[in-house]
Image (cartoon, rainbow, N blue to C red; front, top):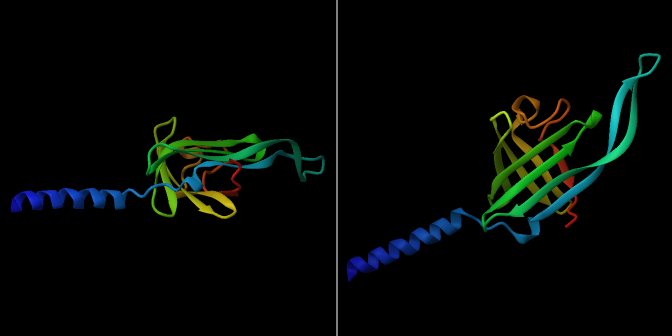
Length: 155
């Protein structure tokens, strides 16, 4: 009987530890964060001076969709000059303050990002500096995944 109690206690302790390690993602961070950005092209005029020509608009977007209590699908799309873009689609876990996500690019390299949340929205930061850009297959020439935001929540 004493052995049964110890085994039962060990199982309960293991389950409690697992629950503490896998913190639940708050409902308040799940959703879409978006900001309208001008799409500008840089060119040189007759005098050799750099000139902006903005023709349209696009949206920087961070999407957080719940996968489980402690994990979420993360999608990031960022637009830069000359309509260059970054795309990131991965799975992340809640660490109590932010979501840390990772994904492999179309060229097979791994990228890790951190999504932070504040009252003014969500922001992405590359946890590998700017290495998650062009060289790793996530972004076109002018883009990097780090530094987006804060993007306001829209739904």
